[in-house]
Image: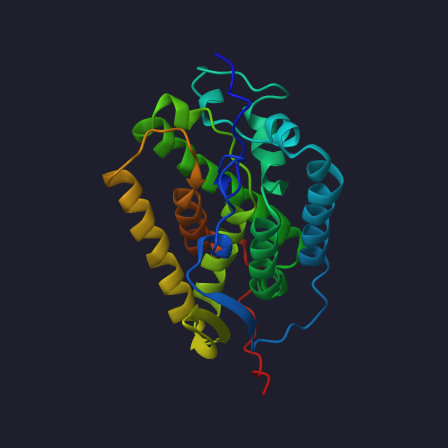
Length: 261
C-alpha cells in the first residue's frame, strides 16, 4: 500500500488543501522575547534556523507536495503497512525535522526556537545541544507515531509528518525546568492585540496544557478522515523528553543571569 500523494504535512501532519495553522507551533499565544541574556552568540541555534529556512525556500517551495512526500515521515512505514517514495523510516525521521508545510508553520517554529533555544544552547553547550535537539525530535516522532498507529485510522498513518516543532518542544521543556522565573513578553490576539509579560513557567505551562487538552480531544473524538492537522502528541512527547533529560545533557546548570531591563 503506497502513501497517498494527495496529502502533505504542515504541523507534523496537514494536507496541502487545508489552510495553514492559525497559531504558530500549536500555541494559543505568541512569544516575542524573553529577559535572559546569553553569554555567547548562539551559533547552533542560528544554524538550525538557517538550515530550516534554506530547506523551505530552496527545496520545498518549488514543489511542496513532492518534497514532503520524499522527505516526510510516514507513521505507516514503522509497521510495514506502507512504503515511502524515498528513503526509509529512520532517515525520514531525520529529514522530516527540517521540513515545514507553510510560511506560518516555519515562521512560528523558528520564532519559538530563537527565543528559547539560545538559552538552552548556552546551558548545554553546542555539541550537547545538537544531540539534545535531535533526540528530542526523535522522541516526539516516536510518541506521535505510537498514538497514530494505536488510535488513528489507516488513512491517518499514511499522512507524511513534517516539522521541527517536536524538537523545539523538547527545548521548551528544558527551558521550563532551567529558567522557570524568566519573563516572556507575550502577544495575544483576542478582539485587541495585547502584549504583556508572563513568567516562563506560566507561559510554557499554559502551552503544554493546551497541547494536552487538544491531544486528549483528538483521542476522544478522532475523525479517522486522514485529513491531518496539528500533531499535538509530537509536542507532548518532545516537551516531556526535555523535562526528563535536560539535566542529563547539561554539563552544568547555567549560572543565573541578570534579567535585561
